[in-house]
Length: 151
Image (cartoon, rainbow, N blue to C red; front, side):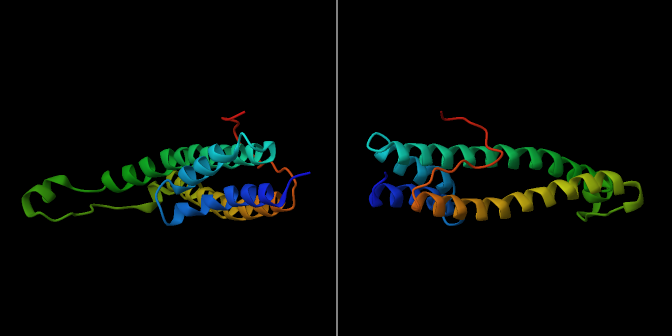
């Protein structure tokens, strides 16, 4: 049976990932600090720390994949319609014959990648809260669709 201190530490490890909204890379820094300071003292904290870090690393990889899909498509669509000759001569950006009709398919793929990214971030928010509640109740929780980096 986990002590109250272990349950609180495990829950706080999950909740510390929200520091990403205040401090860049806080979702990695604070869980690592909490996990490494307590992992040898409690198997429960060790499990929850690994789960929190694995989930955040998985979210990072999924985000990079979505960015690698969406960003090049948007850049290609915009840059292929800019007349660089006019840009050099007049210092103005001129879009020539910008037609969404020819780009609807590829823009749809980029929009779907952005939508999937947004859904993933919303799911991350609620899953972190759910995991912290489970940890505070003394239950072990494993995030869905998580790549196991730390075993």
